[in-house]
Image (cartoon, rainbow, N blue to C red; front, side, top):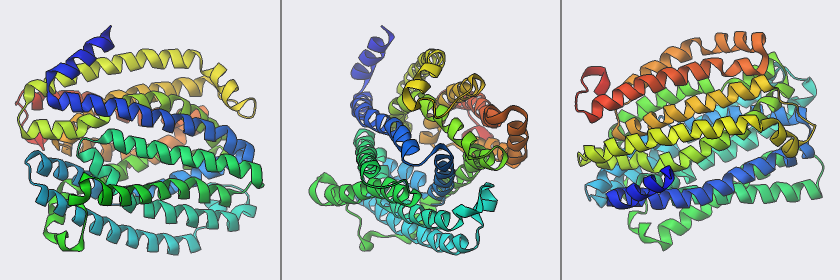
Amino acid sequence: MFLQQVKYRLLNSSGRSKEAMKNIVLSLVGKTVSVLSSLLIVPLTIDYVNPTQYGIWLTLSSIIGWITFFDLGLGNGFRNKFAEARAKGDDGLARQYLSTTYFAVTSIIGIVFIAVLIGNKYIDWPSFLNISGIYQEELGSVFLILASFFCLNMVVSIVGMMLTADQKVGLSSLLFGIGQLASLISIFILTRVSQGSLMNLALYFAGIPCLVWVVATFVIFFFTRYKTLRPTYANVKLSLVSDIIGLGIQFFVIYLCLIAIFQMSNVILSRELGPDAVTEYNIAYKYFNILNSVVIIILTPYWSAFTDAYQKQDYAWMRSTKKNLERLWLLSVMAGVVMLLFSQLFYKFWVGQDVQVSWSLSISVAVYFMLFNIGNVYMYMINGIGTIRLQLYIYVGFAMVAWPLMVWASNMWGAAGVVILPSTALLVQALFGKVQLEKLLARRAFGIWRK
């Protein structure tokens, strides 16, 4: 009944909400494909290698994933600036922002890639991950393959950021889902024609989705209405970099903090408890991440929609949307409890007896994602408005103590302990985010609350 009421309001309140609803439906298709592909890849990958190698693979992948944060926040800065330009009907400025972002991100990622190449020559991977030395040569090659494709993907996926900024997040989600499905198919074929190899896994898992974005970029900028926005060198305006990075640098600092708080779990678990603990943790993480994926489907269109609404001072729409999204979170909590009750049955059906996930780990990860979702509810709306300074301070504070506290907690409570500090950070962020958003929508935000 509630969903019917929300759907009615979305379809009848404004053109902006109708566009959001269309994106939610299309995102649901793309995200469903993506989530199912992600779930099916897990048992295939574990069977292709083994639980220990899979834990090593996950740890390396998460480290490489840090590269995505090293665009100095240009991606999200561009997202807001592009949405503002489109909201004002200034397509010329929007094209300049797009061209400049491509140029700037390519330049930065080029420097990052060179640093990665140099670093890879000197990192003792077995010592860093606390694993057997027999993996040294293989891990260096796997790291290089993953780094190459992740860096390339940072550039070619800007088109997805453009679609999201233009309130076409459904199409962006669909393209991501296609990439995941193609990766699943390639891994399935790989398990039938070759022996277990981390190098083959890296090549197909990271390379295929990247290829999908390359093709999508070409099609979108040459055969759709977006060809009028096609990036060119003539439209690169270095003066606009300061506009993008002014907000983007705050996102960049936030993302560095997010690495320290949320992306170090696999490394800490590998070093303190071993690769098998990484596998156990990620089984629970991927299962409960289904809940987060569903919430993100609905939330994502509202980032750029809030940018548009804030520019046009449509406070009534923003207040109404905030209430609906808070109700959405309550539904997600109930769904999370149901998922927790059936988690052990799902694990056995999903990965069999190869990996055992404790109840304590399932409970801690379930709570983590419940807090993650409410944090995202406020963060997405606040990020759309662009007032992120308070969020930045909160994450900086937690990032400063993250590593020692997460190491201590993992030694005290095992894999379940590694999410205690991230969960606490999310709770604090959500509480302050709620207060800040209410002040912004009531036009009573001053000082740090509106920066």
